Image 1 (cartoon, rainbow, N blue to C red):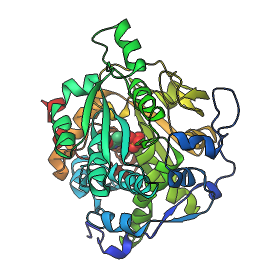
Image 2 (cartoon, rainbow, N blue to C red; image 1 turned 135 degrees about the vertical axis):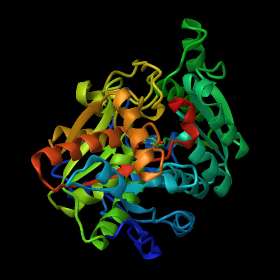
Image 3 (cartoon, protein in one colour; image 1 turned 60 degrees about the horizontal axis):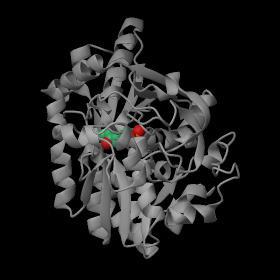
Length: 418
Ligand SMILES: *Cc1c(COP(=O)(O)O)cnc(C)c1O
C-alpha cells in the first residue's frame, strides 16, 4: 500500500488558484465606516498595491512571483500522507489522508502567505510591516519572511499568548522582529483597553487595532494579516492544488475535506481548489466550542478589529468586542471569519462543526502515538472531527475517504500538553 505521495517539485503550482470565478455568487463587498463600499484605492493606506490586486482579482489563475515560488520550493510541495497508523488504531474502513503543512519553516501553513506578503511589500517599496499575532505562528512565519525580503517587523502579540508562549516571542526576536504584548501602551487603542483593565488578556481584535493604528500613522509602513482576507485564501490555494495532484497520484479521491478554522485560511487553502474543480466533495470546517464563530455567530457586517479601524466585512462574527476565554488553541480565537468561507457556509456548500477542547487534546495525543507527529492544538480540532467521522464510517461499514489539513505541528506548544 502506498503511504506517501511524491514530493516532486512539479507538484508545486506556478499560479495561485482563485475560487471566486467558480462560485454561484460572490460575498458582499467590504464597507467603510461611512457605509460606502471600500474601494481598492482606499485600502492603499493599509496594504501594498500588489496585495490589493490579489484581494480583488476575479482571474482564475494568479501567477506566483518567481522569487516567492523559489522560497516555497524549500519546503513545498508538502507531504501528503495516508494515516495508516490512525486507521489501524480506529479499526475503520475509512481511508484517511493528511496534508502536512507543519513541514514549513515556521511549523505551519502561514509561511505560504507570509512569503507572498513580504515580497509584495518589498515590490511596493515598503520597509516596515506591522502585524498582530495570536498564538505566535503568524508572527513567526512573517518574521522569517520579512528577514528574507528585507523589511523590519513589529508584532503586537495577544498578551495571554505572550505570557503562555514565551518561546514564540524568542523565535520572532531571533529573526529581528520587535514584539509587544497587546494591549500595549504604544497605541491609543491599546491604552484605552489597559485603562479598563491593567492586566487585560488581549484579543486578536485588539492586537489588530494596535497594528493598524501604527500603520495609519506611517506611509512607509504597511499592515499584514495572516488570515481572513480573500488574498490570504488565494495564497493558501497552493495547499489544495498540490493535494489534488497528490491524491490523484495515490489513486484516490476524497469524499470529505476537513480543516480547522480560526480566520479560515488553511480551510480555504485545502478546500477551495477542490471546490473550483467542481467535484462532489463535502467540506467540513471545524472550530472550537469556546469560540464558535460559524456555529453560533451571526452573518452580518462587522469590523475586523476591536476599535473599528478596519473596513467592515460581511462575515460570521461573535461581535468585534468578543474577548475569548484563554484556551490554548490561540490561533482559533478570532471573533470573525473569512468572508469567502462565511459565504460558502451561508450557501450550504460548507458544513461547520464545533468540537470540545478535551476531545481535541486526546485527539492530538492519539495522532502523535499513531502517526509520529504532534499536531498543533489548532490542527488537532480537525483531527478530532476526523476521528469521529472515521468511527462513523466504521459503524456504517462505509469506506469513505477523508482528507484533512494538518495545518501545523505542536512542538512549540508543548506547554499546552503538559
Ligand atoms: C493560525 C493557525 C490556524 C488558524 O488559522 P486559519 O486562518 O483558520 O487557518 C490553524 N492552524 C495553525 C497551525 C495555525 O498556525
